[in-house]
Length: 174
Image (cartoon, rainbow, N blue to C red; front, top):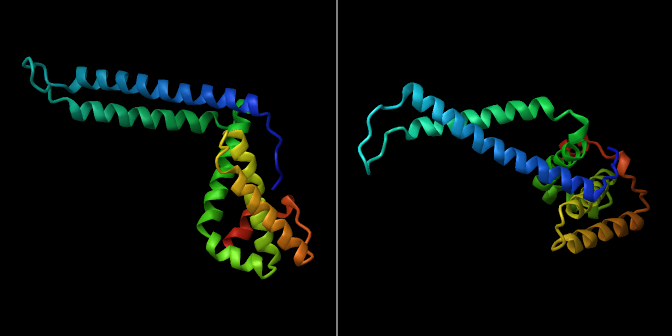
């Protein structure tokens, strides 16, 4: 897999716009769908101070809003504007897959397994990149320590690490 160079300011600007748009559209569509459903299927009369009995229609409006936003996201995610966000999202998915197998990968890396070292080198290098982009400064030092440890292990076992040798298929072997 090839690492991409991402401009942090541009990434933050796009992510902020994306998140605000998502939250705004979820709220707006939920209100609109809820209102339409209540107009079509809601109970006509309501007593002051009592529940209207339309809660289920509002929940259905929220569900429809989530479904519509998921559909829109699936259609626009390939757009060039979202390239950085999609790249980071894919990295986070790969991180999750590796994290679930980390207890099996780490001992193999310490024994000099080339594939395990390659996976961990990719994991910590890209994790550092994602943490930097997301301004996660609390744990970036721990990630750097782990990355340094992997580099030391690769030198100990005379294994040259290259981020581009990583593929998701390597993770499936563990």
